[in-house]
Structures are given as C-alpha cells and as structure tokens.
Length: 123
Image 1: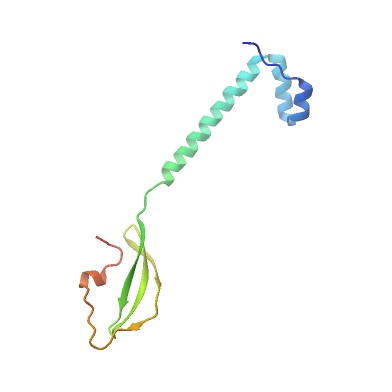
Image 2: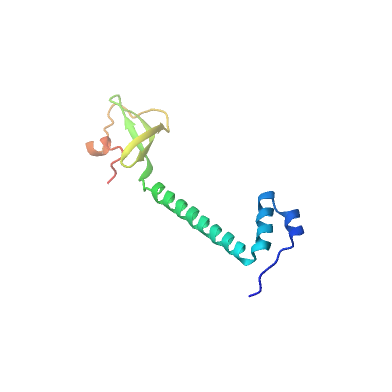
C-alpha cells in the first residue's frame, strides 16, 4: 500500500496550528505518525463510547410513573375529581380537575372502603 502524502501548504491553510505541527511531523515520519494518530483516536473513541454506555446504564433505572383520576368526597356529600400522580407506588402530587359537586342528602358512595382509600397501590 502506497503512503498518502499531504501537501504541507494545504495543511497550513486548512488545519489549526496544533495540527499543522502534526502534519509536518507526519511528512517527516511517513506513515508511522498517521498510524499513531489513528490508534490514539480509536482509543479515545472507545473510552468515550464506554463512558457514555456506563452513564446510560446507571441512569436507566426503571420507575413506575402513572396518573389516574379519582373522585374525592367529604362528609357533606361534596365530591370533586382529582388527577392522582404516582411514582413507584407513592403519590407525588394531585391536581383538582373539577369544582366540588353536591351529590344530595340521600347519596351514598357505592365504592368499597378499599377503593375510597386507594391512592397509588393500584391492583
């Protein structure tokens, strides 16, 4: 395989100052300098790729995030709809979605106590 020779004048016009020195050294050392640059570049790329991969493995811890709506009622038979926001089985926030609605004197909540008291432990 024939070595590739780069014209130094071209190098000096295109490349930054620190690379110009490498270009001149490359002409002095022939293919050896090019091989060293390629090997060093390859090692750096492997190191960076490995670092990014390790970072992603650490960051990709799986979380169970979900939202759902729930009617919340008080002892005066007034109810409002809420968005319940859960992360890993724990409520982290809730947002009121509707105004309170009076259900009437004879209204009885037909949900079980378990359903009424359930927040983020959906089964």
